Image (cartoon, rainbow, N blue to C red; front, side, top):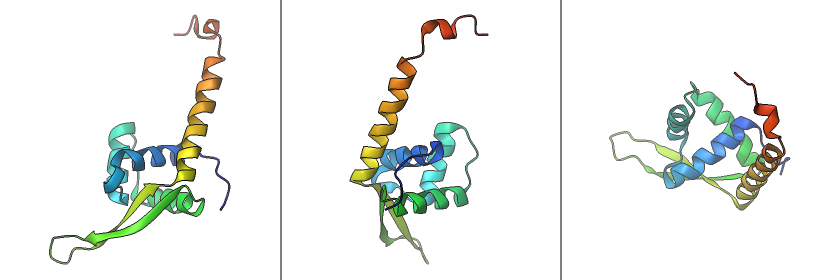
Length: 111
């Protein structure tokens, strides 16, 4: 397993996989990320991230059932692993702890 430190996009992908739960396949992840962040996310960036996260042991994947439409393809479905949950918890705790250390005065006089 590679390092478990998360980049911002990796964290967003992990969160999105959790949101989508049993419907977390690449196109759905891309669409949900676009909706949630307002960013223009490409399918290739999602593919790169999910495979990198899987290599790190933070995501698991399995092949879903064949789509019900004629010529339907099977989808690779992603889920958060135990290590992925730990990484998300750690990232959230670090961000929250650091954010709480910023004195209110630092935000005064901001325009």
